[in-house]
Length: 273
Image 1: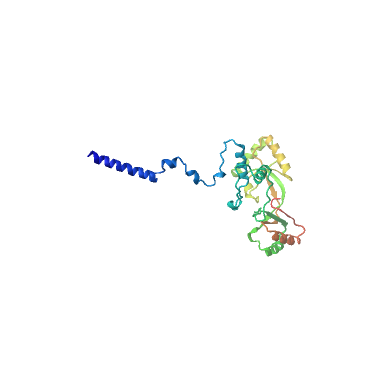
Image 2: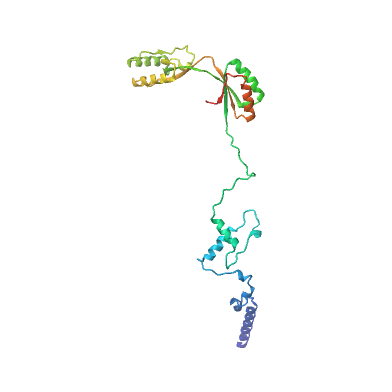
């Protein structure tokens, strides 16, 4: 029994030794000592061991960064190996180029330029009713569609200082009594026949030619205790026609100038000017 056990142990031991010698269980002890792997190295002359703070190592790294290929080019065709012994003249020139200031690159013709689009509004007039019809007929030839807006304007002739209506006639009577108590007697109640229904039964305190004069009088009323006075512009009954044209192309603007030349009394201006 002991002989059989010894036989199998020897057999297993031989198998293990055979496998180790053939490398079936990984690298052999001989290979781990690398006596023959040194002969399998590729171009060992390019290797150089340098300390981490070596100036030669730093110069080589800068030279490699300077000679890196630009985007879109073949890196294999432009890369140049750097010898470990000393930097080459090309590497030295490239290192100096990295320290020189870089000139700004001019935009190429292929770079798309975005044109700024600014909305614009052009206003023409003040036209009388007859001139507005003639101008509108000629303007129709430009086929501007909804880019044209025609408006009626009225000239401001005066400014009225008033107290807005509240509670109808009874409210007006209460305001009259308060004005008299404050020593103000220059007023009148706006009648029910007034054209603007929003002002009926309000109390008018005076009509002034300029807005500045109206504001000055409101300041006097406030100093005397009247704090509800307001100013409203009074406009003439005959209105004027104004044309507003938006986002005109250069060609349409030139055509507009030609049409306007037949109306020398009118002006072209920016909307709101």
